[in-house]
Image 1: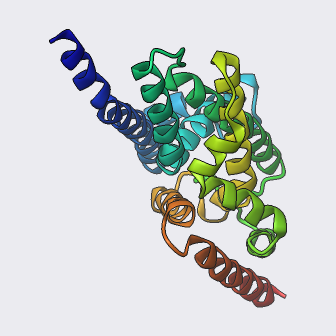
Image 2 (image 1 turned 30 degrees about the vertical axis):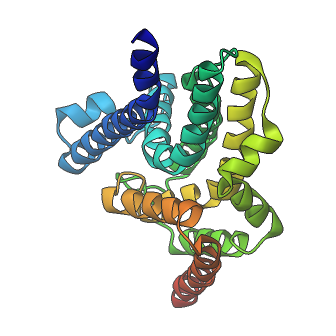
Length: 260
């Protein structure tokens, strides 16, 4: 009887993991929506939750880092769900066999640590653009030339060998688990770091495009997040990425040509 109960609990692990990921994603998106709404309304809440338009201090850097970090969780967690579920499934079977296992949260922590590091770099980039007076209140680049060049650069990156090497790893959770498995909590964290590194290598240029239409432009944020999910998880995602690369180059070139 007790064994049957234990087996039923183990079978529900997948639902528990999915529910946890859905909750994390939903809370992160709720915070992003709150910040975007506050920025658009320019009310007192925006002044408390977002950096000021004048010269930044360390508090402004911290607020912006928090925004980027939460945004990365909201945008990247759904596309990481297949590898997270794969990791949880392996550990579920290990528990059933009485072998030592590691909580899935350790792997997830390693994965998100990479995107927290990316958030630091993105915050520094936003700080630099802000000091150069190149950002609007919605954190969009106001220079058409700079925005166009960024689009072209992101489009070209979609065709590079590094992009496709990283994308292949992101699209093959089973292969990653089989080739990169490491024992223990430290090993699970390092696995999360490595997979997060592949995802960052795949998607960093797409994340940089947030500055084109505005980091606080909710529709733009959702569009990029949706594209990342499709590129990493849907059939034909690699081909879609190449097509998008051509479109980005064309879009960016058109913007620059219109100015020059």
